[in-house]
Length: 568
Image 1 (cartoon, rainbow, N blue to C red):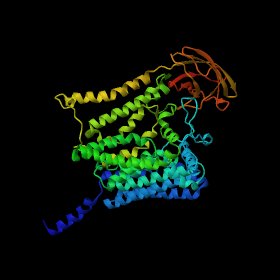
Image 2: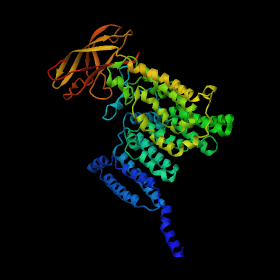
Image 3: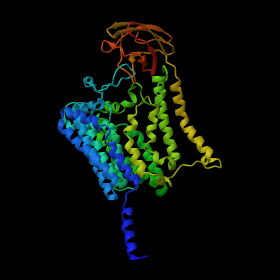
């Protein structure tokens, strides 16, 4: 072959050696496209009264368009990596614009900001009701099965401690929203930096694109802060346990995450079990225990340091407060299995079994994870949230706000990392029929959760309700008269509400009728709407009369007709 031919081939092949992988190009483009989601409503709101913000958003539009073109024509991996950085900067800019436009927050951020103000003033934080926070639009109430509402702060203290120095940022929930938005931005940058170069746009896509997590951050959810601390823990977590500054930092972040919100409590056992299995394979049982013990020690110390002031100043209310989501008996709600009792049947007298099923499923999944860590190890950051699907509160936010952890594990905790992990293998699981024995073990671990779920779903409503009459105003109802019969063997204290859509509406007050309805008893109730009148919905809207009780937790529902000129 002639030298000129060799030189020509070298010139034509050199660019292909540096050309980016097509999947990298597509991933960068998807991250770029995801920034369009939710941007137009933000620009529309800004154009009416905040022109500087609208101008910045318009520049971001230009950035998205130009980056899209350059992504498709980039010839070098280095060029595409720089475009990944441009997309990250554009996403961060849009997140800042989102905070500038929407910092009113919601119920969780309002509680966090108020808790921070009480903390700065030297007052107790936990167990203190602040009902006035819930009078403005957009701040949702958390109704409980007792017929009331929860107005207290029910999260670990780190979000309020981070909010306290930022109270100058504005009135209302704005300081807490600033904390959660800043946490999301910092978490995105950290995750972007920690991931391999070709996967970095995925961090931008999941954290700041799609419009999902920025919306939760603008509502000031403490879970966003917890997720931000979990990201450096989860990225490359199979390498944990060898000691060194990296381990100390990861363990400290784990403790901080657990001091931010309760969701990390459910992930921690899976991570610790996985670290033990991985390190036992190369360090032995004693070395694995030492590694896990070191992580636990640093995490617990960090958690205690963050909580120390409240443990000393208000130990009882502090403990009740951080356990509140587990003990408050909030009304059933969510997109999970509880919807069967809430929407598809007339209720259940065994709602508590949804909670039992959730705990049993979490324990069963942890047992499966330990037994089959080589197969389930990559799913350690997803498995814990499966338990919430069968809980009484199964709203999708519990899954959505932790999705960056799914991505971090997918990229940095592949199946190969668990190929040699230690798995307990009793004699029964090592016999000639080990495949059948392992299937049987999996079934046994999940059977209690399945049984509890079946009990909850198949429960019948304990109360039968019949609409006797309605007091009317123009296109509204001002009172309802209902006959209620207790079909069960337990006395119940019913609390009534009318719903026309998803979730549970505010409670109606009881004008007449017994507070407690004895077993197999029947009584006549007159109930009044919370605002003095219930506006009748349009024709075809399903109206449900519901009654709940706390001890035991029950739900009874029936469809009623309330049309102009009718009483039924």
